[in-house]
Image 1 (cartoon, helix red, strand yellow):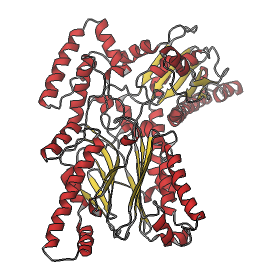
Image 2 (cartoon, helix red, strand yellow):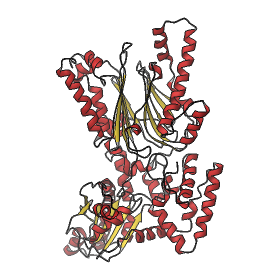
Image 3 (cartoon, rainbow, N blue to C red):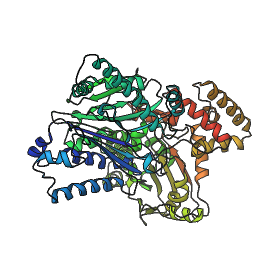
Image 4 (cartoon, rainbow, N blue to C red):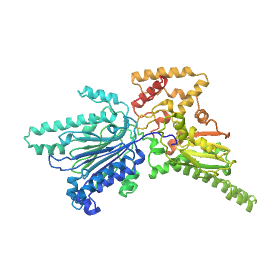
Length: 635
């Protein structure tokens, strides 16, 4: 993705099923679980760099001693800073003789994160700002262990205002901050009720205080809490929670929009947003890692029992396709194959764009996340070229015209040529205030391999997606033109991004999408601006009545995808460059997307088909905001 967008937080949860002494004896460290949490988070650092947070619960702590801990950071390299701080504290206590690593009980007693239950979060700031108060995990405190709640997640709710209204109706006084705060209070309310119901029942039996606390912990039904709390949730989410008594849960939305995977053996239960980190950190095969079922909550009780229970009726599967195209790490086996398939599906469009000039075309990719799709495209082109060569050789042989010169021409020439044409040089932060200086800096983020392309060559560059087009215009096309190719073709493995996301990706303002800008430009050019006003009124009415019709799709209906792509090419064409060759911007078709990702049907940003009612409210409100020139998110 050449256009930088923030997106997709990451989660990790580790529950040890043995005493700390077990891990000290077997693995040589009582910090085995703590280390595994760090590794799971480090292997998912692609999912969040605006902040990080961790939480820990210790089991069977005597009254009067703390048992639940949290550490958060929003400074640069937050994950590194958190673990350096915590390990620094641990090492100081070891040196002081307070902690003796060979005696696990001293770690459990004196190190805040010397517990059995860990949770971590990596944050990309799609809402709520970038300060510490917006950083997960959120914490709801109580003197009762079973009413303490730490919560984090990879999610976005489309109806936060409605959730806050429901809290007010319950008699609460919610702070209107983020959807995380709303969910924390919602779950906390029903956790309190669950606790109170059990407590009142036990009091009638005349149990002692310590026994009441133990029995509440045993009887606490977390799946029931989540089922009651989630009745009005609308969004995409993977939620992780720790309860002070040692229970934990992971809940996934009923459409499976946000990803979550887990692994369990007799030593540990571990969860992560992606499958590959679990495989790497715990040395697992792909088959050993399971997916959390959509609409299910996995509960780990303090005693170690693990259960998966449905808490919402299932919706049609709509797993986010952007996870597969760009967000998740490409070392997952299935994602690797899918990205190669996305690249291969571009072959027909690319060959047409370069007029089947096999020997006079150089293929490259930008950014680095597009490399696997590039490999898929080049592999498909080579397969096709091999078939052409085989056919030509057989025909020449049958006709008695097979000569050494012809063999040389077929075998040694006219094959697709791949080069490392573009590389990302450095990450330049736009701290400069003046617009002109920021643009000048941005134009130097990427660099080229000079001399890798001849003036007689077409240059095809694979990108994984094009959102706003600003990086293309300000940087990529400018530097590619310095290579002086015959033609530049930029091809996106993703279709045109036409509609906002509201489930965790920071793509919410219609006016910033280059595809939407192209459609509006065409409407104005062809004198169809009355359609824009009509859609505005229809969107307002749809929002007011809570309908589920996407009226924004009418903006695109007068035009073919090819017409939109042609106008995008004009809009991103750099000004004041000496090179005057042709540029063509190509996009994956939706049909080819579905063929490459048959199990991941979440495509609302391409098609406008949203998996929840809240999505339709967001898309219509986004157009109202655009028409009213009101900036900001529509949810």
